[in-house]
Image (cartoon, rainbow, N blue to C red):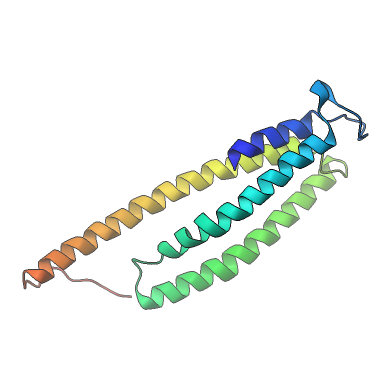
Amino acid sequence: MGLLALPFFGAVMLLPKDGSSTTGRWGMTIATALTIGTAQNVISKVSKYSLFDPCKEMAYIPLGPEAKVKGKAAVDVLGARLGRSLGSASQQAMVLVAGGTILRCAPALGVLYLASIVFWIDSVGVLGKLFTAEDKKREVCDWVQDKSETVCVTESK
């Protein structure tokens, strides 16, 4: 997403400042920015439904049955709805502060967008480490149980 965000926000910042449809700096038009934005939006939806959603479900695999239900409910209900609401409200506040047009706050939105991508990549790395640690712990428990020993005790809360 970041690969298309840079050209999109760059194209928006190169548009004419008066809001006309004429060419701006370096021949940039609103149609160019809209084409890049449309491509970014389509690729974003495709990757969300084909990559993100299955990976999100995989994050629940190491959890117990009760934790899965509670975790999915918290993420799906609170995370999605609260995230959208806060995102919309903060964007509206930025538009109002910037003078009433979204084009004026586009540079700030671009920086926030790229910062959220960096934060997301870091979060995925942390989740991957936790998933790997839980998987190793589970492998050790399976190995010990195969040897008919009762050294491994798993807790379910």
